[in-house]
Every structure is written in C-alpha cells, then in structure tokens.
Length: 276
Length: 190
Image 1 (cartoon, rainbow over the protein chains, first blue to last red):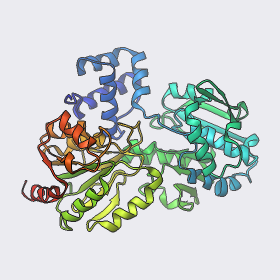
Image 2: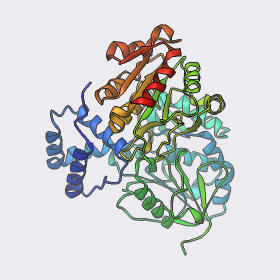
Image 3: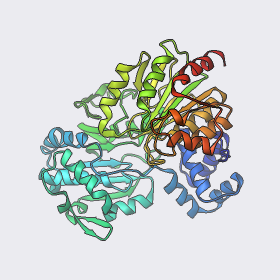
Image 4: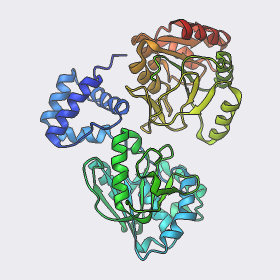
C-alpha cells in the first residue's frame, strides 16, 4: 500500500498544463474526488513517476482523451430514485403536456440511461412525439455509447424494478430487444434524442428548455463553479421551467434560489421569476 | 472553525449495536466530530437514520456536501454516496464506482480524511463481512493517525476486523466495550 505521490500541489501543476494545452478547466472541480480519480488513472496505467504521467499528458492528445474519460464519473442507472420519476410522471409531465413542443436537457448525462428513462415516461404520457431530449456530457466516449442505446442486459431486472416503483404499468422488457448480454433500446425512443459533447465549465447555453436535469454532477464542483453552472441553467430555462438536481444537491446556496420554488419533496425546482 | 481532529468509525454487518453503544458511551460532550461510515442497504435507509437519531445523545445528521464538521456532532454517510474530505475540512460527496461492493466505502472515507487530518485522525473499524477498511486504516497509520480495530473475538462478524489485522498492524485491537473509553482518552489528551 503506497503513499499517494499526487498531492494537491502536483495536481495543480497538472491541471494548469491541461488548461494551457487543451483548454479544459478542471481548476474548480472538488479536489478530493478529482485527486482520487487522477491517482486511480496513474495507478491503472502504471506510470513509474508523476513526472512521466505529466509529460505523457502534455505530449499525447489521445492520452488526454483517455484522461477525460477516466477522471469524470460516469456511473448512472435507469430510473434511479424511482420516487423522483414518479413525481415527474404525476406532477411535471402534466405541465409540460400543455406546451406545443417540449425541450428537455440532460446535462452531464454520461451513458444516457436517464435520457432513455425520460423518453419512456414521455412515451407513456403520449408526449414523446412532440418532445426533443438533449443529452450532453464533457466525455465524448460516453456520448457515443448513449447514442447507441445499448446497455448491459444484466441491469434490466434492477431497471424493471425501478420502473415499477416509478409508477410504470407496462412490461419494461417491451422497450428493448435482448441479444446475448446486451439490451438495445427501441428506436422510437432514440429517434427523439440528440446527443452532443458540452462542457458545463466553458460552453454556453445552446437552447431554451422547459426542463433541465443535472443529477449528481454539481457534487463534483466547488461552490463558485456550482453557482456559475446553475446560472447557465437559469439562463437556459424558459419562464416557469423546471430544474432537477441529484438527491443530495440543492439550490439553497445559489444566488438564483429566490426566484425558484421547490416542487414537493423531490429535488425539483420551478422558475417563478426571470432575473430582474 | 476548522476542527483539527476527526473520529472515523467504519462498520458493516453486525456493527450496528456496537456502533450505538460506542456513540452513546462517548457522551454528549465529546470534543471531536465523528464520521460514521456504515455499509447499508438503501432499502432500509430511512429507518436506519431514525434509529441513529433516536439512539445517540450526540447530535446526529446525514453528511451534506460542502459541510464543515462541528465538534460533538455525528455525521452519517448517506446511502449510495462515498464521502471525502476537502482541504478546507468540508465533506464532499461522490457517486463513483463501488469499492469492495460498497458505497459508501470505508477505504474511500478513511484515506481521504487521513490526507487532510493526518495525525489528528482517529479511525475505528468494527464488525463486518468484507475487506473494506483495511487499506483505509493502513493509510491513516501512514499519515500518523491512530488506528483501532475491534477484536474479532468480540465481533458478530469477525471477517472485516480480521482482514485489517492481517493486512496492516493496527495500533490497538480492543474488545467492543473498551473502545469508547479508549477514544475518550485520545480525544481529550492528544
């Protein structure tokens, strides 16, 4: 069991290199988690020293791509926190139904499981035909996976349980075709999705939405960056639009909190006023 | 104010009763914040929290992200999140892969806390059925902190403390009922 050679000072050097060379700014990510991810990659790829790790990142753009893929957290599942999805079904979708066209943004969607979950809900509410779901992530690899809509079949039992708990009344397996160890989701769902890379730190707003979901992303950001990203969401939400965060995230400390009202017990807020 | 010590208690299967009696015996004037890393099944979540709140004299709450811990307060890792410690001593949450099939993982919390608290870390590992915690304890020791392992003879499920004893050399191996008195001494005089 070795001593971690990547201390905060070394990590700062690395992050400065990366910003200068590639334009990715990780300086306002929560340091404890970031350090753990960086150290994990350093160990996984068996670098003999920090200097060699740093040199490789500076000189090898392909390796930098791997860095982005590995240090971002891509853990996600379908219909995670079923009670959250139940609230979407019962409270949020009926409001969205009143719009002629529905635009939804899943920010930091990783491999896209939440986007597919949302598409299933929209389909069951008869709204999918007039909806567009945008899924974005900083990591190009997960975006490619999300586009394919193919997930491990061994997850389906868990997802099916989540689905039932979220108020689903159909047979969950009707939404995918199982082939050996993979489950491919229906093209009627994929057809309403647009996936793209987007960096919440540096990229700007690209549309106006009635619902933005960003769950378990803000926990990896320091307070100032959290506020900046929440302001980006505020700017990208229509009046009376909804913002959904992860189960341990909150608008409480954000400057926009006064203009938003929480919907029930879930981490969903509705915009009540535009910025003055 | 940033605390300079942190008591970590990690437990899994068979640790709940020991955890309660340990926390109760710490008294309501314990001068150090406590982070409890308990493996749990998220299905039994709410009942477990209520149990904690009703069974301990210390103020008990679930960890919130970016919260700086206060002395005499017990912080419970939320189900399904790892807990880490930032350089300003605030907690952060992390939803990355499970470690030893566990989230929260004892290794993750212990290592991260020891990086920040160093010699001010007091880490206790209780009963459990997997190997989580051993590596975390080793890291605490490397950083100059104090490591305590429940005597496997007194543990309902001895595997976890036994793994720790096999893989590293804990400073102290104590029967369940002696741990709290020992820690009270450490917290007061170190």
